[in-house]
Length: 394
Image (cartoon, rainbow, N blue to C red; front, side, top):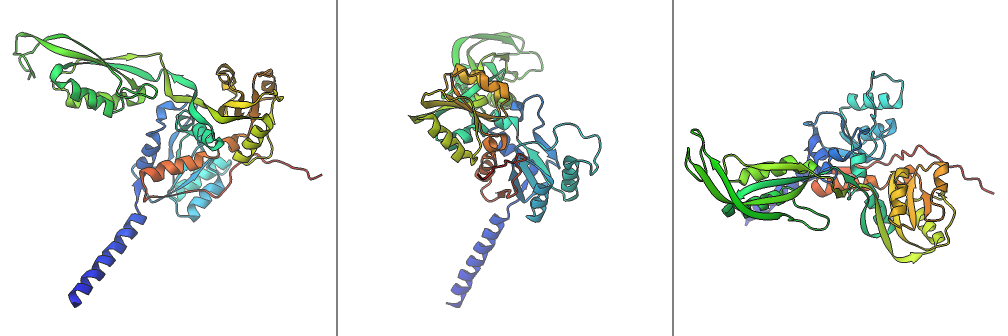
């Protein structure tokens, strides 16, 4: 009986230490970076941007992450106080090259403080803006919009991959390509075109042919498999295809496509279950983003059913909102003269840059916790909105 009690206690102690070990899981900086770029590849960032690792070592261990919209000195101080060794932000702290590190600007001071405290900095900016699962989607979902799709899809992001496979191996090669990220068109996956024909080749003296004889021309019944591949996934798809292809030398072609890529681009379009008055829509926007100050164009007198939106500075996409027939367009940083552009065709609403992007913090935190459930990640308490509003009490 005594030995049974000892065994039970031993099991409980081991279980206790297992829980402790799970609660203190560590990752590498590159693990945190990669889990976000799985849904927002760095290739999707705009040319002017500086997304990715800003400070630190990709192979450094991290135990706790602080998530924020902007990096300021106060954010770094919060990270130090909470013993966070990586900060993940939406807006990059470093947009342009630094020529020196002195206490002259808040950017340099924040970088210096992070380096001294061995805190890494990662920023996921326009690549996350351009993701169909990114900044604008989470805002649209908070608004209650349904049937969501990209407002302005990106171009130049697709490749066509063509490979020639012996008939007996075609299914395995196709499956490997699809598993690696090929063959997605809109809401469909495993998309390909297949045509049978004869391939010919002659193996050289040092070759190890899968079929045929060295020095003799061989004809093989093959399948030409064509599929689309996102540019950022091309290398991994080709590697997966070559790995399972039976030929020693794989014959394949890659073509650039001009098709739009429905999984990436600016803004989001969606619809409400029921149309609502413009005043009700404005109240909904105000409640959703937590702002009592909204700038908007003249009311149109029509109900709001279809809405286009873009978190952050989305003025350049107003024409897309008009073209898609949206009843309203919600974004930020709209210039004075832009409010004349709609001419009654839609209601243009400026909700503020911080306000329309604030939910990005929750999005980033959710991506990390979903991938690494036992890794410590929390949203910063420091509010970083640089814009303040004066409300006069009458």
